[in-house]
Length: 388
Image (cartoon, rainbow, N blue to C red; front, side):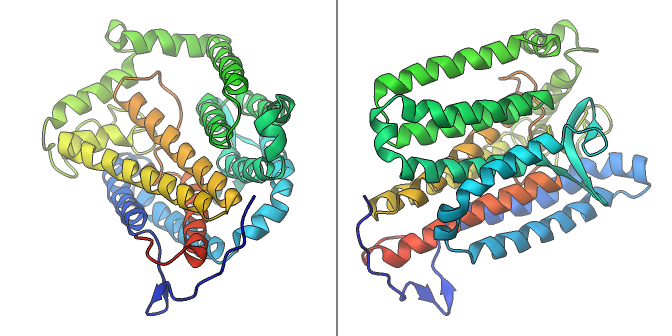
């Protein structure tokens, strides 16, 4: 149980709160790299479709401004408010994922019903819904800590709820987000101290469900077979992956230079969204790719470290929330980069901060705001001497 803590007010310099510097560096660096790469990867398709090579960059800057505003707004809200009212976010998540499937409300793009039109922008419901689920799960793991750690029923209840959300995601369909959500929730449950026997049973059921989801639709099976040997059909089922691999090959050690990608010239589909990492590899080479991966490792690693500090400070809700967000970032980045590099079957999932997309950028900013807020509150009640 959380122990009483004495809040300190001396952890600020010049009126600026003291946050984790490594996390701040990773966030700012990824944010800036995203602006550059969205501009570079989208310039050709924007010129072709909108007669304006900087169309997507301008929209991305608008999204970045909205995301930054949301970051500041959420940073000012104590996490205790989310802990008290987090249960309201679960029905909100169900509502969002249901509305997107309603004809006349949801918008279909490339065969998927994932977006709700809001004037000039489209809101991807799943991006916000999964943050709400993580907040709800963090509160549940605190409220039902005893049942979760000792009784199988304590695990079955929240996982049944998550399963219903996964069904809604598969109806869109959005298999990638479903996998990310399942991974994040399972990680939070494991870190809550659940019995190994119960967790092992949960893992087996979850793995079985993922396999069933993967083979239940013909197009998913086609992606699996194309992924194993994309060069067997490089002009149809394996086209996107082979073009991505060509981008990696052209990049070599140091890349062909910013703006000099050939694959973004209508060879690689979705070059500025799902496959932006392939363009990064082509233009900046292995060195640039490793730097980007290192930044994601830094972001996730520092977030996990913040969660550990929160746990030690007697702030379990903060810890579970931060761990859930860190696992979401880790899973999403791992899947996207794995898909780009041909290590995983193709899925429609963005790379946080780097892919073009307002919903993705907004959700990433909101999620990190919660991590920074947890870090700030933890530092306020931590003993003197904690490093950055």
